[in-house]
Amino acid sequence: MAQEILSTDPYLARFNAAKAGLPGAGQSWLSELREQAAARFRDLGFPTQRHESWKYTPLKAMKGVSFAPAGGTGQSASLDRVPSLLAPLLPESQSPLRATLVGGAFRPDLSSLDGLPAGAEVEALGALLERDPGVLESWLGRIAAEGGDRGDQPLLALNTALFDDGLVIRLGRNVVLDRPLELTLLGPLGDEATQLHPRILIVLEEGAQATLLEHHFGYGDAPVFHNGVSEIALGANARLTHVKLQSAPASTFHFATTHVTQDRDSVYDSFTLNHGAALSRLETRVKLLGEGADCHLNGAYLLRDRQHGDITTAIDHRVPHCTSKEVVKGALDDRARGVFQGLIRVAPDAQKSDGRMLNKTLLLSDKAEIDTKPELEIFADDVQCAHGATAGEIDHHALFYLRSRGLPEARARSLMVEAFLTETVEELRAEALRPLLLERIRDWLGTRRDDTPGKGEQAV
Image: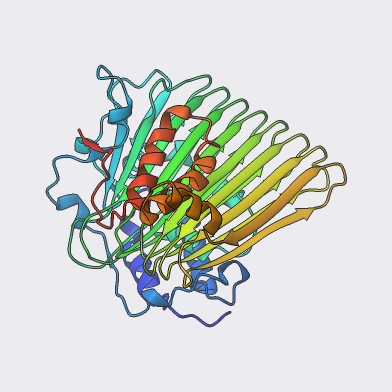
């Protein structure tokens, strides 16, 4: 086993002490799943730079910090409202569907789920595990197990061992959510270093459709180790638009792993905006298991000061006639460091696959760094696949042109960066959500450095 920089002992001790009281502890299938995950985490340890997929993202900044379990930290804090990103985008007569987690725990008092159509269920994971855990046996821990095999995943194992709450979203056959669902994950409100391991399960059966806006943010300066896992299963002809905004405070270490399986003719349209946390890694693994499946993994990263942001993806074409497209752009300022790792794998039987990947980065400072590694692994001969990556500074000729027309240098630079990133936002098919993403980008370009919600948010 590779040398560890972080000790697994506190986390394994917590598992041994808490496992009898974790939700669903009386279910043999879940207890076995947790025990296997804890054993795997013990064997693997925390990832180090000796692991190929973690080569560019060291965890040394977390060393020496003792993260306590969330316990009642977030749940007991006084909070009577949470800002909404979707509310300003909807007609006045319509309110968004909302689900809120504070400190990893579902808060029904801060959620609004009235008006769900028949066949749609949105429920706290912990509550469902206590009430009817059998309905989750076919999904929980199974999608992630089938979500990719690119290296080891110790943080996934840690989450599986320790998760105690989260959210379950289930849409039955041909059920369509007529409004977007806003999922807000607010960090703990206490003043001690805290670890969170939320779990999200999304199952869309055949023909179901939904739009999900997932927003991570927080208040305060206490260190937070956020280790979240999402499992998403899309049935035949199902369609999910998934927009994720990671704007956690600068004291946060944010790790999130998303596993997706797609059946025949399903569509997963994803956009991630990563501009928060001191250290972040957003990892997405998709398996295209049914012919005609279509996957879009697009996004942007905006980092400054000494932020470190890692976007790692793997798209696995397992069957013929599937398509995937990935466009990820970033802007790095000061001493920030960005990482992009993307893999498209085409199996031997996946003829007629079409997979494309592009990563572009603007370096706004001579001390900013980008590590980019796009990869293709093709084992079929009748495919169309392409990948590429570029990095560079702002075009000084274009900058001079704008300044010669009377624009101050800072304004001219902001316009050029905004135009560069707007091309990525336009990859999102859900046009109604594009203004929200563009506003967040403009906030960042306006040197907004606080951890409060952006201008477009509305408390409801």
